[in-house]
Length: 248
Image (tube, rainbow, N blue to C red; front, side, top):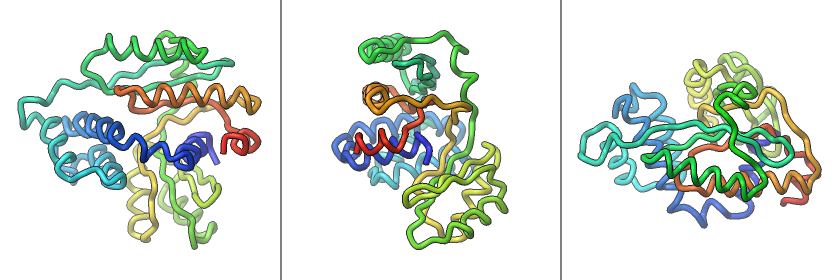
């Protein structure tokens, strides 16, 4: 199981998602607004469709979703102010961070990110300093409860997926970004439950650390994710089974 899903599993077990649901809705609303700039119709705007489905899965109220779409599409006076910005940096022990934020004030956002990195033993990086370590991929997580691994593997490859990794109760499927919709539709047609279907940044190489050092890095990841403007935090940290056992 990749570091991405292991970190998500840890947070679910800690109950962090429920405790911060209001903050989650705010972040989702910003992502919806940004995606809606390409058009308010989810039938033609695939990025918007993915984010709206994610919002629904998190039980975001329908009126909040619709309001965010209208703002993003410029259908009311409060839309059109947000922008998506990518920042690069380092965590403790040389771990690379790629951070995506949605903001209406770049100065505020970069100041908050720099402060969090410094406090966590990391630092900001120049543009391009770590971006080359990551590549864009389509990413799908399938619940494996009662499912056959061979069938999931075959369906994924037949639909055009590049890789399938099986973990604890889930399958992680990676695709070329342009094939995400096709592979997602294949699993939807086959009535598989998808926990995640989104574009992600996958590290090309991973750094493995001791459990104690891994915890230090993950504490910084959590601090960054708690920032209001932060959308996604990607790293090339590999979370070992030993570290996962200690964290759990």
